[in-house]
Length: 399
Image (cartoon, rainbow, N blue to C red; front, side, top):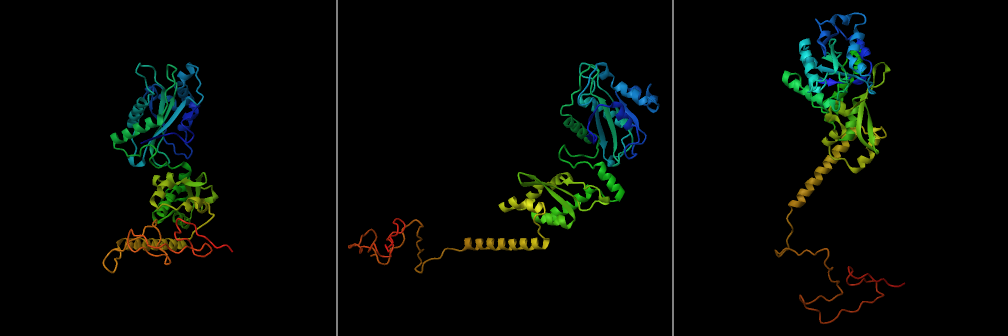
């Protein structure tokens, strides 16, 4: 079960206008048998004293005046609108719940959300719940219409109302064994009316469903971000990046050709499925080089393209090179050091140790024993360098 706001928002200021729409034919003639399933005053329900007024001329304006009575009596005006409108819906797979079940659920929701009488017994908000058949998607649902002004003139608290709605919906799903929905922010967004109308006219799946399939296939096949773009192009999926400080941080996609030349419907990857967001996709692939982060926008904006054949050869070459380098590293690490011919391990000179004695310099006869004679002085005009090239700068002849 979900609780959602209509496309034009959950707050309004025309109670009678909203009731006329809910009891009318609907935008696509989808409203059938509109009637009240619950209300703050049971006299407006079937069998009540005012129930017969609903289908008569002036009945809906009378109902609207009753709903707004507390606001009118206290002479209040809410800048953001006094009408609170929320749709409660269950998936098609759960079937139709029926008026009695909906009545119990709506009364329960009113209490859970704090719109009913408070602990002191102060008057509740005035509200009605309208049922007018299945939605375009085939979901059973009701519309809750409520005036936020209580009988005592206090404005109902709607702070963080969506988390409260969500917790109640999840509890109802578990208790009634309804189709489970994801917690807030973890699921896929609902299909819009524009998508459904296009799908109905063309007799094909919605753009969202088709794009979800194509993008999922491209992500599953690709081994890198350029390959992902190449697969999208091959599937005739148009894409555009979302940039932040010159870096590509997200993307949106649409089908390459729309029927009747209509405006394309763009979808962010995360709205198709949470795991199709760009950060989640990048986590699948190898870490890109620093060069890619500086040039990615060229690929995403069409400034540079890579054919799948070229990309395949490049990736295959890098994989082969990586394999050879790893093989060489293991071979080197497994090779034992060579030993001297007499069996002794040859000494290794440290890079910081003094270089070997030059051939022109007498070698000491033994360790810690200095030569008996000093070496011949070095001619300052000769082209030979000093004996210790590390600690002494070379001397050059004067020309």
